[in-house]
Amino acid sequence: MSLREGPRTGVFIALLMTLALGSAGAWGHKGHKGEHPLAFAAARGDLAAVKSMLASKADVNEDAGNGLTPLIAASLNGKVEMVEALLDAGANVNARTRDGDTALANINARANNGDTALIVASRKEDRQTVQALVEEKADVNARRADGATALSEASEFGHPATAELLKKAGAR
Image (cartoon, rainbow, N blue to C red; front, side, top):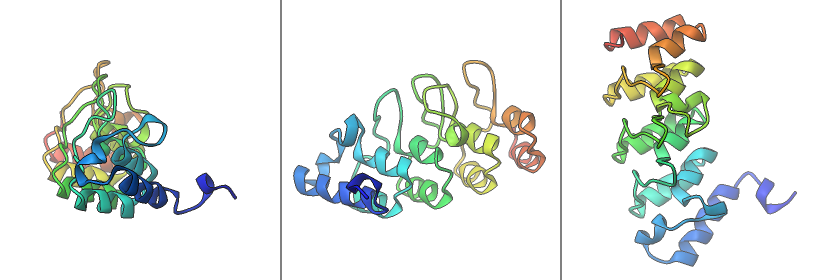
């Protein structure tokens, strides 16, 4: 098994980045494959590395390229603990990629397609993440460039419980 395949690769990369960059403020520099370490760890679902970087004052809202923030990256893996940790650290729940995606929209889509985290979570029927984003005042009526919303995605993908949750939160 190569180092890249190991279960603790994200933590190891974060540790190496800490040693290589030195200061807490250095977390903003690009890391593995040109990605920012916090967004990379969030996308991998590496909660320990994310918490470590946040404790080191990593920028929770840093744009890792194309508007991709750690919260939007975390929304891709559907792990509510990761989303909550980033929200607790002050992540902008309504941040968008260059194409208009948010964290909620990206739970079931690739970044750069205009989704938000809420839209993605709704499409994947990740009700815990949808609830967490709604509680943090995510814009339940945010639209992608093509007009899709979290409610339309939940409905289109056959998730009536998620659609109802969104309606109760004011989604139209």
